[in-house]
Length: 215
Image (cartoon, rainbow, N blue to C red):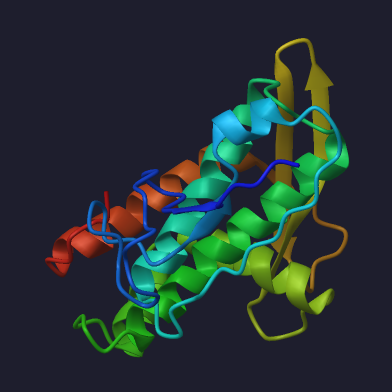
């Protein structure tokens, strides 16, 4: 019978966290997330099905960098899917897009809810309003996905209109239009282009407010 101890690591930088108390940040990158993994040597030694378990403790107040890193993981995943890396099909791509744009919107909430940094709710809202073709469109996409229908004055509908596949990966098209003009043709934009521009706009927001970007 094989026995081993699962290792606790930081999923953002792979730093070992076995001796770091639950709730404390990663000493290498400052991240708040944890992941339990089986050491490679133990996994390779297994010759038959083996059951193992582990408990992962979570910081109950992880701060805005937690959402930032989730955003980065979804963005990297969509980039991989555009290259055809480890893709499970169009549904997998669709779910990545949903998660990515929700994270791009929710980052704003985490920024103004985190009392350790200066931005207020109005600052975040004004920044999104000042970037209607990037962050504003992310907000439209997330709200369309969240509510299914939009009927507020001036609201836009934004949603996936096409996922194209090819030998080099996937391409996702997002279409948007005013909600009250159903006969108007949707304006199209590439999902990865939109996400990358929005991420850069958030980086600029952090720079303007002298907030260090997590590694």
